[in-house]
Image (cartoon, rainbow over all chains, first blue to last red):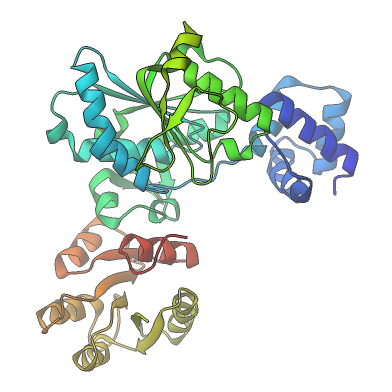
Length: 278
Length: 124
């Protein structure tokens, strides 16, 4: 059991480093998430782990603790409506704007173990004949090194491949490997993963035409949300879109984004945002 | 209310499946093998069938082939449910006429996800 001082220390650091909001009522979550970290770092208990952090605050250990507190739960084709809207309505617009002069760049921000990025890759691969020679890049990023390693491995358990994924897509895009299912190279070639904290500018990522940042903001403090929305706007190109998760809004984003009629959760970057970035 | 027929020779699996399916507010019926299931379907075609592969009398593959030949036999959504998880077995089942495939062991999340994908139940 962790006492309230320990919970306070952990929550404070999670807020400071990653903008993670841990409601008082969810302190059990801290204990549950810290259990495997404590075990694999050789501590008897979560309390011992916290004591070690208090005594000698090792950055690597703190990072691991905070990363374990970020919510990584995701699945293939989670809330598919915005993905379909992207394929049918947004992609053709981007294709016209880009006119094959530059690649269309997609960012799955806070991608966890990668299922959203891979779902987009599957859609693109399935419609590749319609897309012609369109040059498209997908980047997935997450604060958790472990989540990114898993995403990069492109290997998923039998349980994971049955959540959200149809059997037709499973046998079309995956190959069995031991007790795992691994994505084929035809899908893997679409996506690149990088570790990144949304609170810190990730300059190497460049500009994107559409950013999927779903079910990420809702776990953040209001400050971190504002900060993240501004950072996403700064990573957006001239005609760029932002897709948020169900129940998430651009509240706090000032006038960086505006909602789009007929597409719930889809926002367009405003000209105001462009002027401010200039 | 939509009806789902559970076809499995294991009474335990049928019971587990019934609990899950009734949780989705579907009406659940049971059959212990493919022949009994076919008989049921000839009287009342269910909206969905959760189908085991290996059963005495008539197995799941033979059942779904026979079902698809029946009048209105193309209507039920057939979700196969089996421990045979290799690609040839999956392909064989899809060719025989199953719509979705659950690899055992399954839990409520998986059945829910598959039933949502085939439109039997709405999203959460």
